[in-house]
Length: 218
Ligand code: HEM
Image (tube, rainbow, N blue to C red; front, side, top):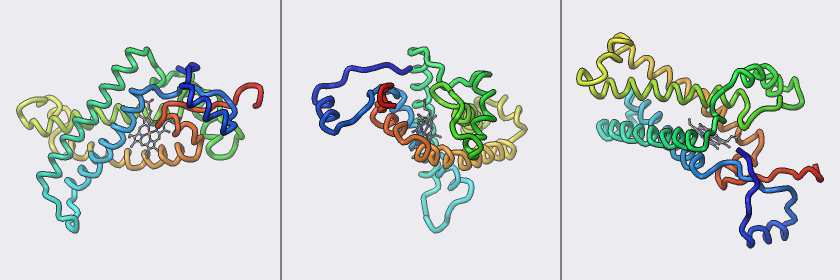
């Protein structure tokens, strides 16, 4: 939801001094930013510790049980940050992360743009179809992997149906490993695009605000 905001006087003065053109709009509310950086950092720890638990890097000589504790604790953090974002979406009635049929229809045109076959991306909502596909798949896979993780943590005590559903510990490990590979393949794409596509979007994810060219000097 984009809306114009009233800026603090000293900030307006600084912007005028710097001859900054355009209008300043709020693009990322505070809870989205808290979620983003909290989730990004926690999930990175979860993935790195997960890889270590899978195949310990002997040159690091880390304490296995401490790595396991970090893996569990940071996944609880990740789940907490995701819960914050879901609550935020419900309170603000924000559906910017929910893909719609219309978004998916634009996917081929968006790919044409990314592969230099089109000079501009198709018009989209807050996030384009590629972003929506990646973010939405991340949420689903993160929840699947967390559920599987809890099932193996509470081995035989709770969530025994999850265990039965997937068909045992080896299959459970295998699914979590594939999910990890998916994250490892897609996170760099996300970081690359956020640094190269429109850097003001990154500024908005940090400060909350973004500068848009105003209609008269476009
Ligand atoms: C250095 C690392 C990262 C940078 C620079 C970065 C940057 C960004 C930027 C600029 C956006 C806004 C995109 C836009 O406005 O078009 C965004 C959104 C998002 N990023 Fe990242 N990101 C990073 C790491 C991560 C990681 C590790 C994850 C989790 C796997 C992640 C998940 C998301 C999600 C879910 C959104 C949508 C936010 C929402 O609306 O709630 N990011 N990121």
